[in-house]
Image 1 (cartoon, rainbow, N blue to C red):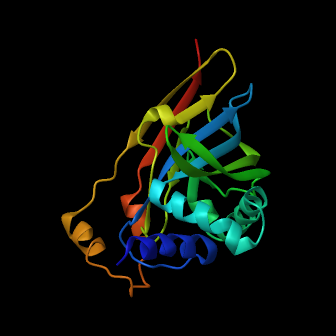
Image 2: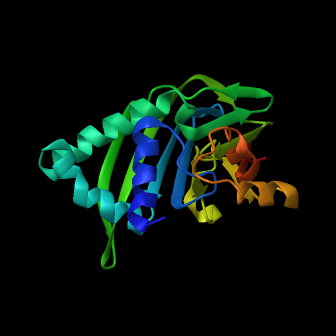
Length: 219
């Protein structure tokens, strides 16, 4: 399969949420941020997805032509389409505190932009969520997973430095990334699938890293 076809499959996934291949052919680096209020409740969550260089290069080149608009307007329109299509899939994100799951609301703001890192350009999609109800983090673990359920796109925070916790003075928080324990049979299955497969929903969760956060008031 050619590189352009692989990258085209990712574009197709983000605009129609269908599967081209079951094992990852595209990579997204994730940065996540969480905000606590004075009482220790989680009030906002946000994330930034940086798409890999090759996909970014293809889409940047094609966006203006596809939308028949200047690049800034094309980025705005593409962001709206991505976020709209991700809604039915919970924005590829799972958030829980204690034993309670929280469905992410429609982001109150989002943006698709081109950023430079050295001589290279990347596409970044940012989404910010105002959470309601506010869940109490004190005494509970916050669990955060970001994954494509089909495992077509690999999402990774890469290091805890890509996880930020904004909290009031007098609080302290810990954060860690727990990698999944995966059976060899599941790994072999994932990498045996070809682009004709359509029954791989749930595979991505098995390979997803788990972000674990705890926050407590300082004694």
